[in-house]
Length: 68
Image (cartoon, rainbow, N blue to C red; front, side, top):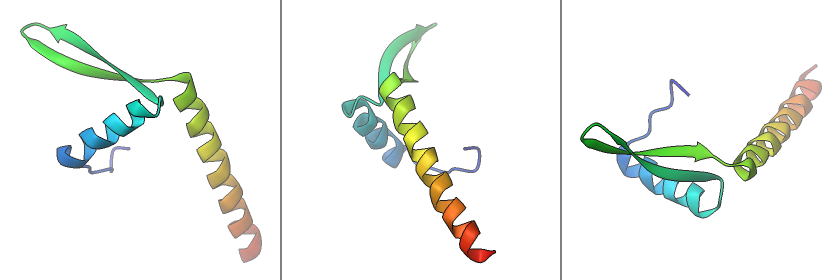
């Protein structure tokens, strides 16, 4: 994800949507005088990612087979 560029205006609505769907959770943590929101992927989120990658692998597998 190092090359992924998302503006704050797009990132935080996306995080809220993922949290609403139960794919991530958030928790406020105090770090010195600052409060930060830390996001954690849920088991449901891990399952979703696994299904997504399996679908992508199937799609690319089909594309590669057609090109050969």
